[in-house]
Image (cartoon, rainbow, N blue to C red; front, side, top):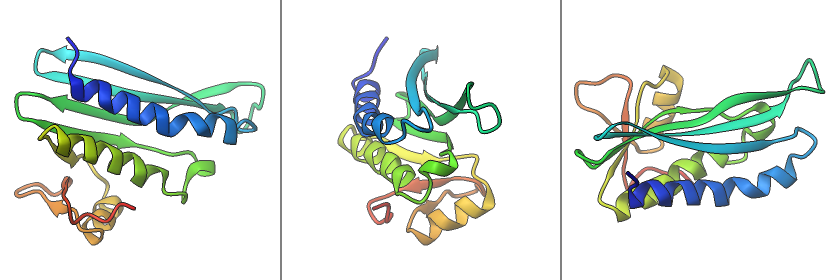
Length: 149
């Protein structure tokens, strides 16, 4: 089973991250996108990044760059993990990933949430205009007013 929204998210993220393979050749940056249906109502999309091991430069180590779940029954997307290695931080990459997913979600009439957040990220997203989720202390909804770019 494949959803149009799943394909759009995969394509958008792939197009956005592809140039970084060239930009970060010294760090040996690569990525792959894995999708799996955990049930008929839950699709997991995982972006696995690869980079040079800091302590063993001849080895490549994987990391989870992004993990999200698509829930077609509720028209929701939940981002549970977003991680950038040090060499990719403070360049707007994470915010751009969230923004691209939000644009697709909105076009497909889905709501986008960031869940299981640490306090510091939660507070940053609230300051950027994300809506706090009612009765939930570790999740926000990305809305039109959220300043991502």
